[in-house]
Length: 389
Image 1 (tube, rainbow, N blue to C red):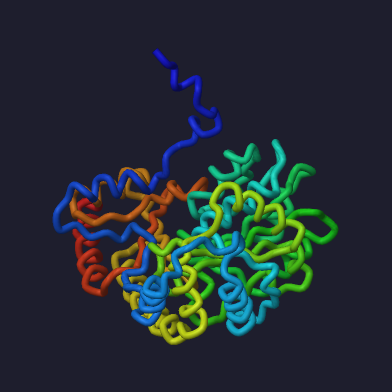
Image 2: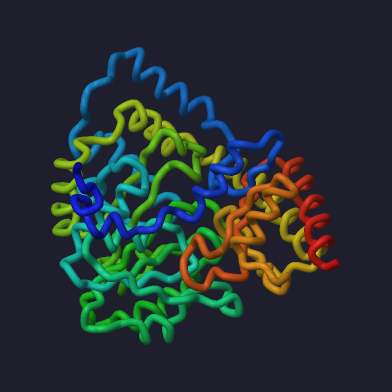
C-alpha cells in the first residue's frame, strides 16, 4: 500500500488546521444558532456593483484578462488609492489577484529564501505564519499587548530583528483585535527599519473600516513607501467576499517576480469580478460610508454590552471585531468558546486561533444584525452567570 504520510510535503503535513474551522463544523450541526465568528459583512454586494458584473456577462466578457488584470481596473485602483488615502501608485505598479489572500501569499513567496525570517505581530489573521512556513521561511511572532491597544511598538520590533529578518507584516486595521496604527506609530517603525533591507507587507483589507479617524498606511510615510508591499481588496469595504478579488501594489522589481508566480499558478483573476470591481471603485464611496456607519453603531452596542457584563475590552478602532478578555473563569479560550457554542448556541472564536498571546481572549465579530448582537449578549450574560456560580 502507498504510504501517503511519507509522500506529502513535511511543511504542509505538520501545519495545524485553522483554529476557526472547528467552530463552524459544530455550528453546521445546530439549528437557530447565532454566528459571531465569521469575519464577513452581513450586507449583500450593492446592486450597482452586481449589475456591472451581470452586464459584463451579457456582453460576453468571459475570456481571460491580462495576467496583471484589466488595465481599466488597475487604473481605477490607482485613482482610488490617491482619492481615498493620498497614496500614489502608477497602474503599472498594481496588479489584480484572487482575493487579498493570494496577494499575501505572492508577497511572501516572492521575497523569501529558505531560513529567512518574517516578523508577524500577533494576535493577527491566521494565514501569515502558515504561508511563511510553506515558503520555507521562519515566522517570528511578536506578542502585542492590550495595554498598548495591540499596536506593534518600535521597541518590540527592534527586539525581534535579526540578521535573517527579510519581511515585516503589518496587519492593521487588525483582525482579530480591531487595533490600528496611527501615523506616529508608523514613523517610529520607520525609524527602526532605517538602514535595513527589511520589506513591509501591509495588509490593509480593513482600511475603509476605521472609526473616528482615517486609515494611515505605511505608504503614507515617505521612509516606508519604497519598502512597502500594499495588499488590499474588495471583500470588506464593498461586501464582495465571494467575488474573490484583491490587489497588490509595490516596487516594480518585486512586483515583476510576484507576477511570474501569479502567471504560472493562477493566470488571471475572475473576469466578471474585475468588471464589478471597476464599478465599485468608481461609484462605491457612498456604499462604504453607509456600511461603515452601520458597523460603528453595532461596535458601540457590542462594546457597551460586553462591558456591562463585566468583561474587559479595549475600544477597537478598526475592522469589525471585539477582542474581550475572558480569563478568570477557569477555562481556556477554546473551552470557553466551545461551551458557549454548545450551551448557548452562539459561535465566537478563541483568541488562540490567532497566534501566541491570544489565550484568555476571544474574537467576536459584530458584522451581524443588531438583533443577533442583542440576543448573543443576553445569552453571554446567562453563560457568564453560570460560570460565576
